[in-house]
Image (cartoon, rainbow over all chains, first blue to last red; front, top):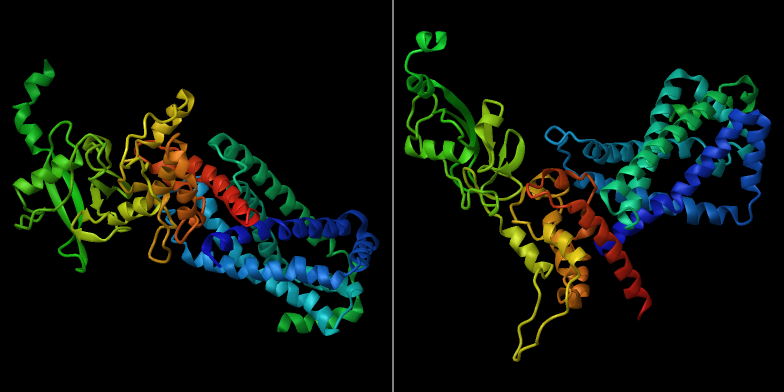
Length: 222
Length: 262
């Protein structure tokens, strides 16, 4: 595929569908903070009750994720950051976009292995995922690692939204790009806070599930 | 009065003041690069070019050893030709408009290594001219008969297009861009902005698809990573990122048109 189309597809998939899924994921997680276990379980049940859920997962999440992630690593490889000589804010965001992209790639691989992959293997059920999260969040080491991954993902999404607007010719002039920077960085703060709050919510004892203790420990060791 | 009494001959004092330069040198295209220090007598209002001229007159480094004079390129000496671009105190810029009084010392001078170094500060900017050829940065009006006057250009459009026409192909934006490097074939911001200039021209617009197709090819517009160093370092203040974003819109339209019209 010619570079132009490959890069445009990368930009598009980052927001549609991946960005939309990211927001959906944030809302579902936040239900754990807002309504506790019951509310979160309802959200999980609703998503799994969607028709053609496996098809939706593959076409709208896994394949775009794989493409965006692998092509993104190539983009990160091609960069030659020069922040020591050009210390402006936009140039820092250029470098951070690539750093957080790689961090998010690693984090998402780990996170999917912990959750959806274990469900696919039949080791756990969707209903036990809250318990798995509880175990991860109550361990200080994995909590911090998750927090780094989550904040990276939030930045990568929010700043990616800013560059999506440039790439698709929506924000053209400097004023439009400045205003969209403020909006996107506000989105970063809001999204990051909501994700962190839901991570804290999973520490609540109501998510404790003795049946998943074994699987989650095994997942962590691996 | 007190000043007149305490100081001796002011001319002697002035010649005693020195400016220190650390210059990155290279003897031949594939040779290793090394730095050499020079101490040059200060003169009021001097710029980096006049300092290099002083080294040329008296090619002796700061340890007093005779050395080969430093090679550089310069032409207009008023920041319109783009020939004397080099990295001065870490920033790519024109040596002619780099006034010594406004630079922190020691002044470091290095070639723009995004381009092949010919010798010392002399670089080969051919890639920029190849890029201009690639994107067809001209207006084809040659023919066998007089085509008559072209369409008029709106004054409002002429005003912003004129800003784009100030590009002197100096290469500073390529040097500043983190995506122009040996791992990509990105042509850089300058030729992209020229596409916008020639597509804005009422006659040039007649061939705008050819130019858009060119920047949708290898090393074209998609390689922009939005670091926006180019617009901040352009000595002519060209709105390069606005050009790129506008061309993003135009190339996207072109992409869908190409798909849907066949």
